[in-house]
Length: 388
Figure 1 (cartoon, rainbow, N blue to C red):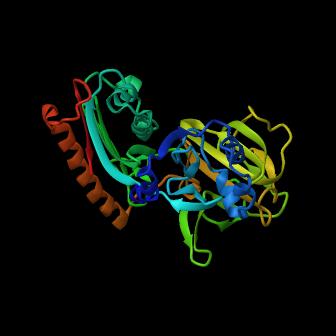
Figure 2 (figure 1 turned 135 degrees about the vertical axis):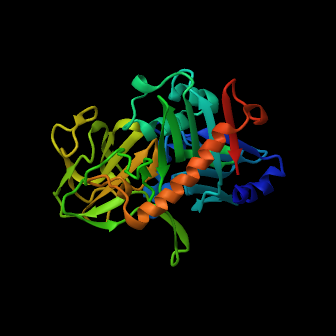
Figure 3 (figure 1 turned 45 degrees about the horizontal axis):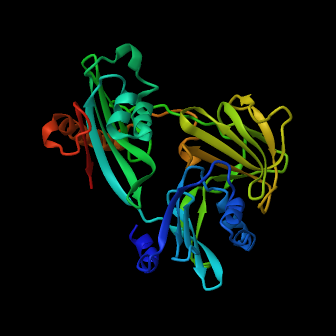
């Protein structure tokens, strides 16, 4: 945010106006340029990597347009991931395009409450955030039965991390630890050092598990949200995994779900998107062709062939670009594509036990804090605060 303010400050001093907007559903970057009367050279003059990045703009994302006193566009900032944003800036009689890191504040936040209706409803009412409510419920959905075992006034507590961009919540919050007590028994979930979630016994919490979309293929390029190219002196990103394989190799649905897009895009070529449960979406790009019968609206099961490896779009050779998104945010598929859950052992288990004990103490302290001493009180039985 400090970097962003430095960009905008010279213009803010001279009656410039910042428009805070949300990216429209279905709008492409080229359509956006046309709508704001900017040259499409800001797309066609880009290299392949940057052109591909413009297809990562998510519908609903907050972006900014800075105009001078004459309403002329001076700067545009459009996030494309948690780490990078498109920056368009006027330079006399033309505009320049670059990718810049997003400067954000990261806050550790926590809350506790006693259930009155349901965890989802009460958390949403307390925090005004469906994302935080989904985060808590998602941590326990595969191990607990709220409908059967939850009672009114059962306590819950949660510690999570939230990013803020320009003073507003940005991207998905990240669950660190949570507790819910039902029928007198406390249940926990923790984010471990390996970035996987475990219960109080050190068993991995089974979440959304994906199958490998191309059998026997090697990974030719991994996932990275942001990297600085030392030769080009520019920021790059690769929001997915590339599986190198021969042209025509079958591509399988990594998980069961509904096809929400099937078609051609300039950057990703022949592309299929599949929506799964809990806000997950998978993306399969650069396909040679689609399998007959796989259309928008089709429900496909995990392992079903949906297309064939190719090199369509902005691609230098036959491969599958495989992307994974959670509520529109790109996440690393390598953390989710795995065959079985695991149980911690040895030194890893010892470190986890130490971590979980520390979180347990913190969660208990949240529950025990005097509600009337917490200033940001939401409603009768809620404690909610920010911890920097």
